[in-house]
Image (cartoon, rainbow, N blue to C red; front, side):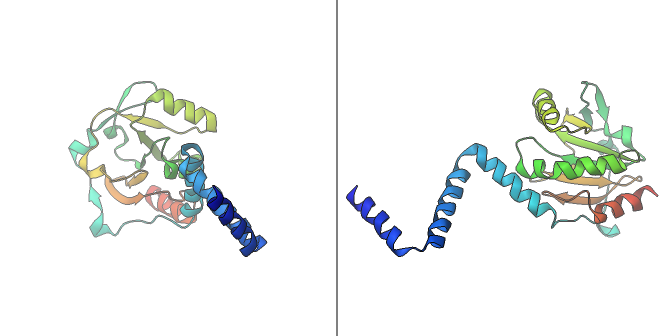
Length: 202
């Protein structure tokens, strides 16, 4: 105990006021990162800042992937519990986003997705797909005031949509090609995103 008090006394004597403030902030942040609740809030805030540095674009034509019949037979469930096949959206521009309420980068990009949906939802089919329980998701959406078309995984995700992390977003053209694939939080309410939607729906 004496040693700890000696170290504290030495720290007070040798550090300037500014250095002390920096030390306290560092240890406070460290403690917050260890505690689960604040850690998620901090992680979401960091991702909110980072997403504005990530703008999407259209993949080169030779790198675009064509969906096949098996991909279009993928079955989801809507928020009323009704089965919905990806084939329902064939011939339309589709914004397909894999997400979860517990995922900080997913939560970070949702405000931008909501804005993009309000701007383009009348011409682009938005599908926000999650593996979580509908009750959990609906509670989250209501709490934050989101009005987004959420779908639930009913059958295994086709290999073409498999990704190592969430959020991952695919944009599918009217002719059934994946023209954009982005992992991580992205600014979907940006001029770059608007250009993608505008080019695909014209």
